Length: 115
Ligand SMILES: [Zn+2]
Image (cartoon, rainbow, N blue to C red; front, side):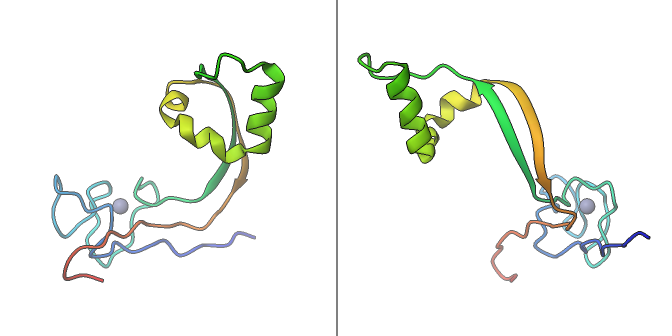
């Protein structure tokens, strides 16, 4: 048995409507406002939780030793956010999908005159 999940309609403030495309249709699948995005449209997303292992070089205080550094990031997992620029330059060694929603979603932008 398969369950058919309704696919999102192209909304007037749909993120799939781009300046480079027509103002009344999805830039990616070219469906008009009020009709369903196509099943292979990249504007329709789903939530995915990944576990990523990556190598990255960070500047750390000179006095830090391995124990200092590892315990800091284990005890303060949010601290890794300070190194966003460096993380973007890291090398992904492994990427594993932990969870994946089947719910299709679209992103709506706030545009003046639209809700
Ligand atoms: Zn689309």
